[in-house]
Length: 421
Image (tube, rainbow, N blue to C red; front, top):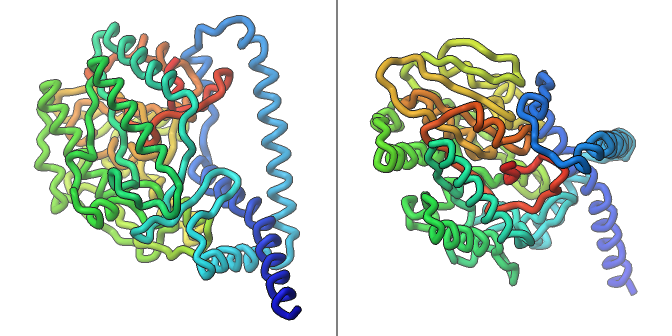
């Protein structure tokens, strides 16, 4: 009988902690996402680059926006009530994470994703298979054809996943759909004569070294990895499209490295809490060579010439609260809808547009050091028409650099990194 009571108490603690953890984890995500967008200027990209929409979608657009607004307000009020009124909230959240760690839980679900502890002791997201992968692939093919019609080159780059090839690093019997989806995309795109640049083939073949390209508590690669990937991209641009990028500049000795000891807790670490995960060091890398750039970040009101520091959000490096801080977002002010870096130095070639997510934030600044111009669009936040944008702007090469192999999204909402309309 005593054993049964103990088991009952443990189960109740787990259930209660689970109830508390769901809104808490959502709140931590919400704080982190919104923190990078503080002081943003609201820009209607759809007005600047309108879609060729049919009447039905156009008529419903106001209703959709109002629906999103109401839902957002509702969630915000729930978050506020939970965060401010639950007794010992932070302690319970920490306890929940610590409990998961002590009982050996390697798969921890929350409101947004499934988090897994990998064989290497790192955390990663686990995503379900894409339902509309065939359509996603066709969308990429259509984008490539549209880019070619505009006399621009196109390259598909899949950001290396935090999974080592076919090695079973996910615990238990959980299938690795992201790896299978990626392989399918590669296969079909190559059959359609699309330039697929496979970065993973050129990274280390050793498991431990490969996993060290990423943070333990986050799915992102490190700035050092972004610099390494920049070298690979630069070499590919030189070979395939006659760019003349001097890759010697990307040797690590040409950079200042400032280490923020135990200053980083990744997005997954925030979810599973410090009760399970440990804070990590964060190396902030900046070039020793002075840059002469004209930087345009409309949503931050930046339109000026200057050095590398123009694309640095110093506030992201100064926060001490691990749950609110995101030093990774210091580069290019985090997830910006659009950023443009024009190099004022003479003799440089190559205008590049990178259509990418947050992984590109530690690639764009380094690539811009030796190109005439590097722009980036993040379609998750750029709610205008990509095609209308490409009708107006011209680049030598358009690079699709994404971290996930495809995404299922709502056709009526323009908030997906895979919406190329």
